[in-house]
Amino acid sequence: MSALWLLLVVALVVAEIGWLVWRGRRRGPSEVQRRQWLDADLPWRAWLSAEQGPRHLAHTARLARRVHFHGCAGQTLDSRMINTVCGLAALLTLRAREPLPTLRAVLIYPGPFWVPMDHPDEAGLVTDEEVLHSGLSEENGRVLLSWDDVQQALIGAEHNVAVHEFAHQLDAMSGGEGAPVGAPAQAWADVMQRAWAAFEQAPSPVIDDYALEGPAEFFPVAVEAFFQRPSAMRAAHPELFALLTDYFALQPRPLFFEPSAHGA
Ligand SMILES: [Zn+2]
Image (cartoon, rainbow, N blue to C red):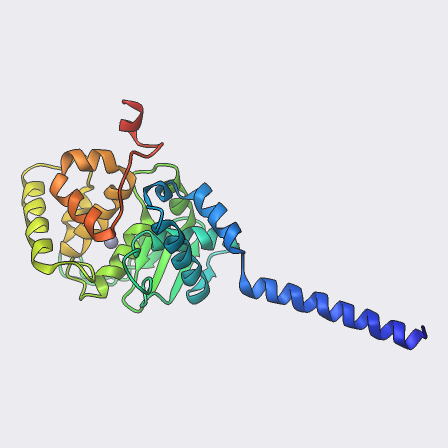
């Protein structure tokens, strides 16, 4: 073989390897890899039926391909992080044909981040003061998350910032009044109003008082309790718990990190 032919063969092999690497990156992780990560990272996968498992995986992959992810304030991103965030969003959309169609971008910060306050304070003034957030959902389809807070939720923190902000996106799709898209409006309003009235009488043992900020916060805060303290929520708010169980089509079971799961 002449030197020229040898050079040509080597060039073709290099080009083929380069193309395979590019194609692999473009496609992202394999389905098997995604499922292994989800099973390892999201304890709520145990709530899924045999039919829902593959659907959850498909919605996760769809979101990972469709939504633009961006690391902020020096945060680097990898496929497993993106898979985790998309997997959390997909837990809320098992009934939907297309998971969160209005979600365009997710910005991930290493921890809580400062955001200029853009709504009036108690005196009715809008100041240029900045407020520390662990998550934020914007009407333009952008969600901002603190990665530290996302991770803490996976191991049992009381708050789950990712499901909170994605619940805001579901609510925004139906007008942002506290009843998410596809919910039976009247039944939803009745249950929410009863729960609201009860909270005003006595604080909830499981739902954060922040729920009383307004109807638009009530649903996302209740969703956090549903995912982080399902056993306590079932006991304290059976009607609200049943409403969310039905809406998400999930069958909650005690989680390894719940205080009640250990008899505490
Ligand atoms: Zn909120």
